[in-house]
Image (cartoon, rainbow, N blue to C red):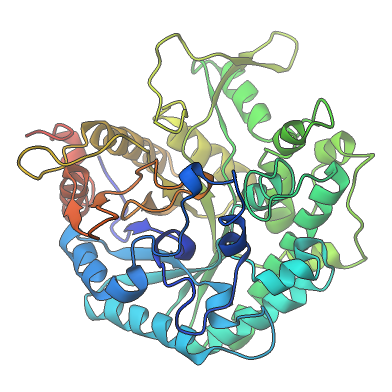
Length: 468
């Protein structure tokens, strides 16, 4: 296995999922603070009020990151922790927390990668229309300015917004995520257009206010497909499927959400300055309202494409110039989230995204939820995650050997945490968290990942996943 010499090996987490301190330090309410108190929305009525208590334990957590050998840590800033109402008065205590976190990371030579928005919309902004409010992109630019002016003297890697498909699909379509709305396709796409504008204005603001050279990208969901065989016909069919835009089949909220689950509608404006023709056709009766110049705002120079890729579809050529989506074979492995495990999706996803957009690829999220618990010796032997990690990383090595520019990989996540509507029922971390005691335990996957990092991937060729 060969990786670039300057390859970034990291792991990530998001603010609401790990920080806790939901009502401490001057933080304002977010849509998730409110949503988690709504009956029936979250598994066993669990909340992120305490989560992993990272707000108070971040120094210990950074020490664990150093022990794992991370070269970079991707974390998100909580908008309401920094600006409680989303605009107006700045909460200096909130900024101080991220100041201290950045300094702690740099002290142990871990590079901070900041995500400005990972779904924590200030509650006050939701009351004013949320992502449906045409003014929200300006609010986001103001928030970006505050964070950039405070942290860009030390932070050079920035991600604007995480997973626009989830923000609008699950938050405004199916309603299973905050703020829990079930809207029309037109409204979903309108909210998404405003998210895209916020991204563009955020990039402009970062470049105008950065105190040192910066690299900036976005992190949409990488909705990608893989070919059933490596025949030219199947490879082209999978490429076509990866960038297809298919309208929902009904007005059911879940169909609305599924109808926006694609890559091209969300990536083309960011990386090509246009909405895709197949999307304009698929959504022709539901298109968002937009002004002249909107696409110029969205289409800002970016330094990398951050893709969150966990799984993907298998397709084959249908013999008529199209593609057919195949079911996975009976008994195929699944994560505890119910997602198919398709290791070579990182190869095909990175390949197709690089071909279309020409930007260096950073896998900003990839990982698996498994059933983890300490054994009689107090160790957490997560063999399935070790195997998942190893096999997926092979895909990055292969695509890099093919000439695709790969900048880095961020395993999701550094520690077990609050998994949104699933509460604490899913464990994604390479560090085990006992939520009653806040004890942390490095899982076997953390040790395996440490070997990978130390060898810059060479250990993938010789070691067995979770050999104990």
